[in-house]
Image 1: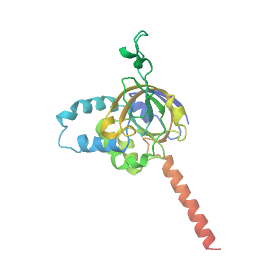
Image 2 (image 1 turned 90 degrees about the vertical axis):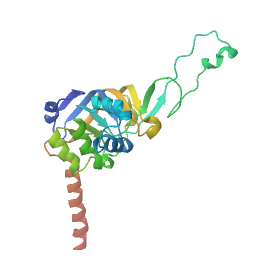
Image 3 (image 1 turned 180 degrees about the vertical axis):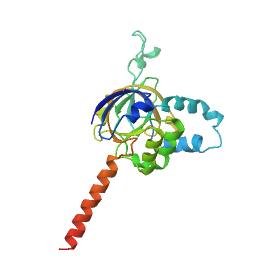
Image 4 (image 1 turned 120 degrees about the vertical axis):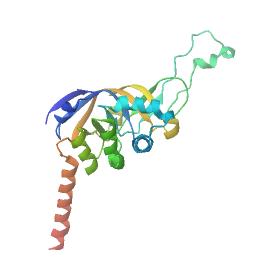
Length: 240
């Protein structure tokens, strides 16, 4: 088990050098994406007859982010930081109320920048029907989530040069500290805050490789061991 510091976009060579159990610190720009986002990618781009002209700008933008990039299964808690107040001097009748802008959160309005309050991983198996195709189509190098994924995703990791990164569940606020900037947000109004594409810049985002390009999956090993132990307990007691 080795520790790596990788910058996004990541080369296939660097990804294939990783093995299950390695610790990785990720830096660079990546995007979040959950159920609605993956369904959108599949239905609008990957399995569609062609990219709709109205969606082409976003398709090209997501292509730049995902090529050699990472998607994070995450429904963040966000807040919008209000813009700085205007210079002191305006009275109540001259926009004086703007001196005390409201605190905003979630999907609140305003023109301030967004920031992550919590950024814990979502259970990844929900994206199993989509993930292999998304990896192949966009040339992704990594998926971040919790709980691992299934055989189709593991096959795609091996064939296309990608890995599954496990993020620590229950440390949402700690992980959010690695998110240094919200670069952009897409489809927030259509999908809602948790399901939107949040494009973020991260520094030393801590993850562990639990599915690699060599066909290894910690999740498979844990599942097999748990099943064997359960059978031992059930059938062992039944035979007493």
